[in-house]
Image (tube, rainbow, N blue to C red; front, top):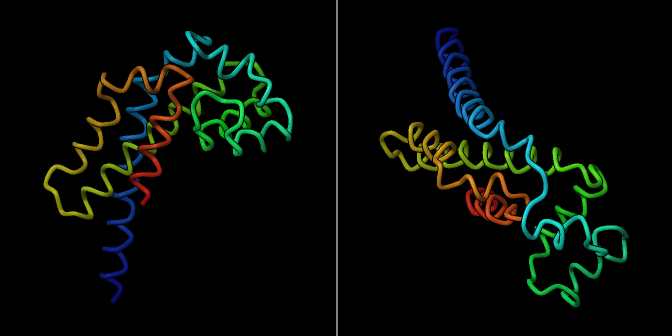
Length: 154
């Protein structure tokens, strides 16, 4: 019994360490994005978006009245970020990076659950692959990392 508990605890620590390596790699790769500012349509969608400034704007985000695209979860995230970070892009970039790290760990866990060989490596590669740079480093593309996050959680 005691040996089983030690084995379970050791297994748990290995899982935590494996997840920490993936998260650390993602943070390391995307760290330069923290120095970036707002680009392209970030101004229209975030810094100049009146819906992000008031509670009534949050209600309007969910009613779909004034936005060209209906992304209520993404726009709600922007609303929350705006109230936390204002017009400082650091927090927005940080959140995108954290979602990418979570996505990478979730890829690993889903593949592991499906007993796919190389699941951990697949999660790591997913997390740091250059194809994700635009989605992670461009603030307005939060919708991509959020969509992946909720897809993997389901």
